[in-house]
Image (cartoon, rainbow, N blue to C red; front, side, top):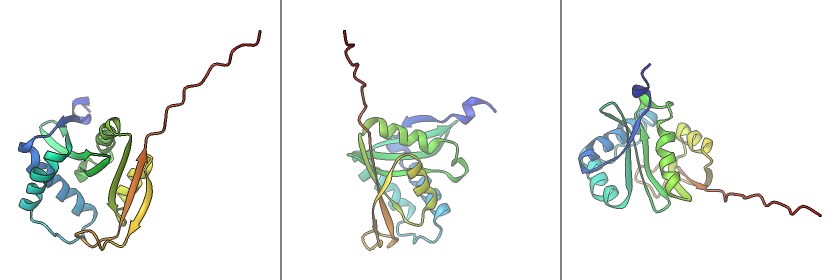
Length: 165
């Protein structure tokens, strides 16, 4: 297989990409959690990306060829959104996007739904730990969720012991 087709290109997204970014979230979320209530229209979700996330977050996309297949929105020690299209999951795209956020932040928190076993496993594999669980009363979907946390470990610099002599 051609490497150009298997390695995603990570690009900064602009207002022109917000409809596609919101669409990736919709497809990925409802493929994984089809029972979730659909609380916003596609247009409302695009407006959220355009009016809330874009001005307040770094938003990156993973492109394969000319197709956007994954997105991440992050900043201020939070990952607000991280989604990869179902047909492209398990290829390292989410890990690449997460890696970009981890390069810029020493500590990260994020929420995911408790029943989203795939996401929970993904974050735990990347060193996140569950910090708090809720009954979902405070989220729009009323779905129990989990707060995850990751912190960069300090680098240890070995000290040379002076030789006795």
